[in-house]
Image (tube, rainbow over all chains, first blue to last red; front, side):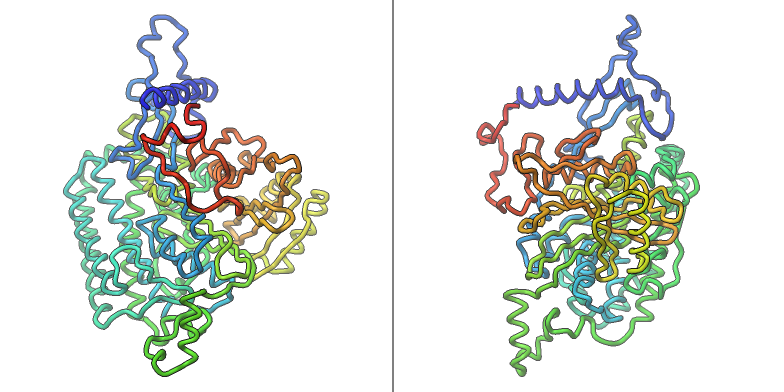
Amino acid sequence: MSEVRAEVRDESVRELAAGVTVEPAGGAGKAGEGGGTPHGAANGAAAVEEELLTINFGPHHPATHGVLRLLVTLRGEVVLEAHPYIGYVHTGIEKSCEDKSYWKVIPLVERMDYLAYYFNAMTFCMAVERLLDEEVPPRAQYLRVIHCELNRIHSHLVWLGTSALDLGAISIFWYCFRERDKILDLFESSSGQRMHTRYVQVGGVAEDIPAGWADKALAFTYDMEERVGQYEAILDRNEIFLQRTRDVGIVSEERLLGLGVTGPLLRATGNPWDLRKADPYSSYDHFDFRIPVGTVGDCYDRYRVRVAEIRESCSIVRQAIEGLPEGPYITTNRKVALPPRHELATSMEALIHHFKLVTEGFRVPPGEAYAPIEGPRGELGCFVVADGSAKPSRVHMRDPSFVNLQALREMVVGGYVADMITNLAMLDPILGGIDR
Amino acid sequence: MPDATGLELIAHDLREQVLGAVTDTQHHRGIATLIVDPERILEALAWLRDTPNQAYSFLASLHGNDYLPAAPRFGVHYELLNMDRVERLHVKALLDEPADGGLPELDSCVELFPTASFQERETYDMFGIRFRGHPDLRRILMPEEYEGWPQRRDFPMGGEPVLFTHNETQTPRWYE
């Protein structure tokens, strides 16, 4: 086995070395010390000093935030080329979805980007609702917003903790996970699960929030805002953190747009593109919130944007809880949503609907829909093709991590290895979402 | 989203500029779809991107689909976005399976939209649609030595042996 692996690796190394000489550190990105032409191998004595080193970074490396493998060519400490290799946790979720009825797809898509499960379920449900032409009641929209924003805070907290850990700050990791746990407690109390909650359903949400939950969530948002201030106090004046993030990994806004990058990475360059504002869905236009943007587009701005987003999300959760409308939490269309449990004892019709929905599921008229939302990492879109049966004929997730990963090469080429770690951390890739 | 009239206007202009590019239009559930001749997909995308009053300059997503019983079997979908007007346009190219059993081919749009690189690789990986002119068309999610196109509708679900050290030698073309 080991010979096979070595052979495969040698091949890719050769291929890579060829690639490096043809294409010197292409695109924008910072022109560091090593940004020039790397093929100095021809001129004698310098050849020894300029020997290139090609190493596998990952797939099992704590700083890759999952199982990402980067084939990195180095000259000393300087990154000359970096190629991401992905697919190590590819589980064929999209294929599996084609064999499940629509409501059984929800738990599957939730497991793609495992830090943004509410978002995954929501974008899938929005695509199906579009195909069904199903209205979502206002209370359900608000409940979705509340949970999505809590999920965004949760995702950013995990990102902040692990990223700071990559940069050598361990205590912030424990603080972030302490707050994250409170969010998971809230999720557990509202939906029964801490992760992969299957809370968002086609036509609404699975359950109303329990009594007292709103107060707990409100208290959490106030607490969270205070904690964010404490995190900033730890990191913002930390000389090591500042030196490692400032002016690192700058890629121009135009280039990022060309590469399809969205979310905090794009907003860090000063482009206020956020689907919650630009194309409000699920009654986001009812809330008053700001879109944090950066100015330089370096790793420090990416950090600032995400931390500021935590504050805005707290504010959205508060507004949504305070303005939570009365009414049903899921559509009353019995052809799509399960009837309430108590009706089953008295109504024959409810029993029939229940039976049909649980055994076969609902049918969706033929059509194709793409529903995008603003996930924690950028535009998260779900493309669903319905063929008229009770199972989707295709489910595709446009995962922001997958698309954003393409920008990594331009962020790291020409910089130091240590900056590559920073860039990777601030890119916030979730390999479950990349590989699906 | 352009409304039904707006979509027809776009289709009309595109037909005039790029002859025979648009084969059909659809407006379903508020989603505007242009169905484009696969041979002219690049011209159509370039026109949509560069014409000043269109300016669909952001490719949000690219994905493939297999409409197996239908006659043009494969579809490649482009979700274009105009960020200023916040309008989305869904462009679709339908491809037939070649009669000689080869792979269907389509021009790569990486030159126009660099973001398409990974997504075209994924479409190639899952559906076996070959993108002409893609700089690095390799499998991306499946192992490089994998045979078959897993997301085609006639590809069986399940039964895939998990690759461990002890059965590595039994997988097809493991030595390459």
